[in-house]
Length: 82
Image (tube, rainbow, N blue to C red; front, side, top):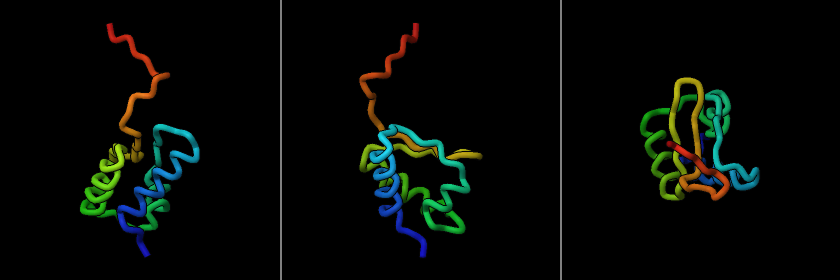
């Protein structure tokens, strides 16, 4: 049975925390496995985006990958845009 969006959000956050990574690039085939779904509808993508946003995690659905990242600026990342 397909997982609810909030359960998928928890699964994603747990994975990111266990692996100490602020971002993921997940190929669609792996994303289907992660969500335990054979098809992903727009409504599910909106629900997942909302569930992740409530936990300060951003998600973007691309053509080849699903990009997921924590919405914070870690102190070790510095940019000099001059």
